[in-house]
Length: 461
Image (cartoon, rainbow, N blue to C red; front, top):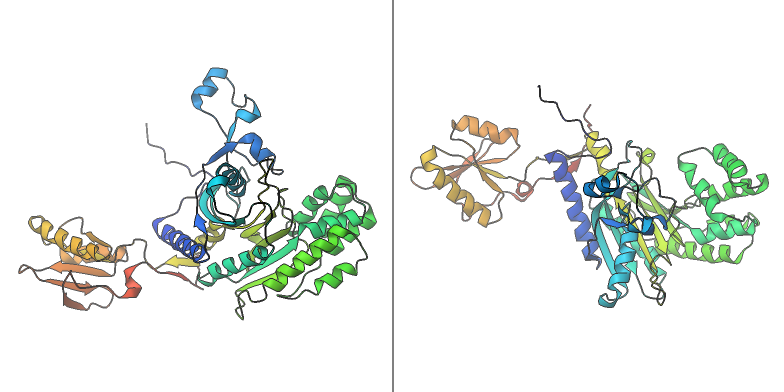
């Protein structure tokens, strides 16, 4: 029977070595920036009780349940068992983090600044920018009892520093406040603000006419009230400007929660005036259409989109959550941002817009004269590695020309030759220059020490 070529699983992307170099570079930048801002790294388990996940929003169709094969065989079903007993793969990192805080509150110092970079799983329909398995990078501040509002303006600065170090398109971070939106809906006399928010949150994927129809026919909102909801959602501001406050008040709706939300949003926008400085590559603007679909957000919410790739949706999002972690005695409010690493990178990699200078970390290939002298080549490689130079030894003692071509195919910039008298020479195979070198002192140029990641305006076909 002929061997069958395995089929890729839709929504579960795998990266080629050069693509993985790009991802690793991004992850290194994320870790460095997060730690520069004082955030400590944590990792949580991949599964949570299904009952916990289902309490946090309308995500029942997105969760992957986990069961042992033996358990399935024993009861003859694939969906049996009480919800409390079923485990599911986490669909985000915020809910597991809330559980982590409750379990470890006595060992943590508050306000606790955490970052977390892990994979998550969602049962979505795969399409560009949306996957069933993908990597996220979260950064959160959580406190016990109350959380200072200045943290809500701080997190966009953290992400601005991240994007400033990466060769990515310009980013616009849209910010809103759910108290503002809920208060506005309450002022209109609407009974189910959460249902209205979920419909309005679809504006970036639908049209105002369709959202209006779903508000009137699906949620039961009156036509005048539906028009007011859409009027609110169309309001936006310029970077650092708070003139949206008067625009909202001009809509004629009054409510105490609305006033609180307006004040909080104005404080966040004013607090991010310096984000990005004069750099247009990262801007923060008020956008009153942003509500976020998850129910645990209570105040500020964020969504960031890459210029020229708005069709991908938000690549970085989050918000404030006041009651996600509560042990009955103490509430642990928090605010966080999540960067969709896979969602951001994969479309750019697939277009050839983001590239690594080489698909391997190797900077030097040590040639082998013949198999009897492989030990000498290995000794030279060990000396180079001891000084931090990524080095490998040629796989075979082929002709030197063939070994050089092997290095060239892998974009390894240097080939090292051990001479019969024990001295060495190193050849830059790009320029052809070959010089005497000592493995205990020689270093490659800084730009060749590790693969470099860059943006190109010449995408692949």
